[in-house]
Image 1 (cartoon, rainbow, N blue to C red):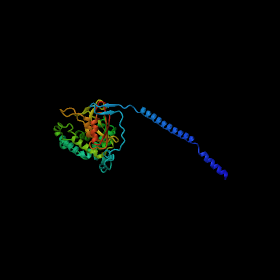
Image 2: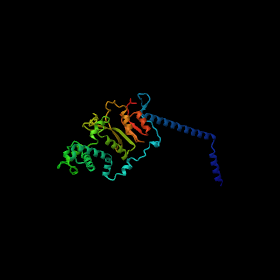
Image 3: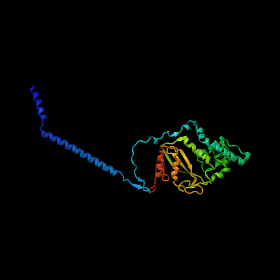
Image 4: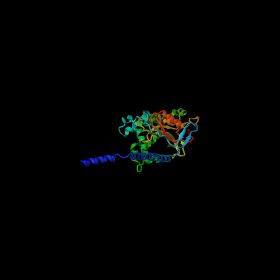
Length: 341
């Protein structure tokens, strides 16, 4: 018993150390804390220096009017998009198209139905004028068969191939001979019309696209009804190769075809579906060259869109265009020249 009490007492004595040792230990603790904080400051300083070294120098340019400042690096803004900038429609075929498409033929007919009556009426009118009573009236089945053969010729990559070779008994394709005769195909091709040729001259004085205006406008109207584009839209020009007679045929030496018809197009970046198109017919007769043409094209091509992003090149891009698109809840991504305001 005495031994245990002595041990407990000795432990209590050992635990009560002089005040000097306590102070020394506290000084050691303070020194360790200060040294650790100094190390942290040194590390943070070194890391900031590394980050500064990694970040490139930000270049700035001033616009011609001196009101707009451009930088080489975008601003980092992290925030939620407003509700008006969110796309409501699911990208893909619309409900209108889904409810009317049951097979390949119904999808084919869905795009042709709005324009086939004009084509049939004007073609039969021209055929009756040329052949008189000998003209065999063109019906819907004949028109679908004719357009189907044109599409099939494109599938076979027959551009530049003689038409007669497609109907040749030995080296041709049997489906062409089974659909219609070569003579009937030539007659339809010669008399196919999209307007009344007798009244075209008066209409062409104010509209260079008078020969196909009605069909083209109806075709463009149905494009947005069939497909909802995704969030990314591209606007650019397309040269359709054509070397025939045309008052608005364009020569573009940097394009592969060089000669053809220029079309402005707004397409879905993912599916390449053409949401809107416009044929460039040149400046009006006796008129001055158009100013801000790129801005006008993008604004017209983007009608009906909201919450999308438009990508275009420096022909279209401008600060004014970006402001106008933001009013429509549309963003823009594009290249721009240094001296372009």
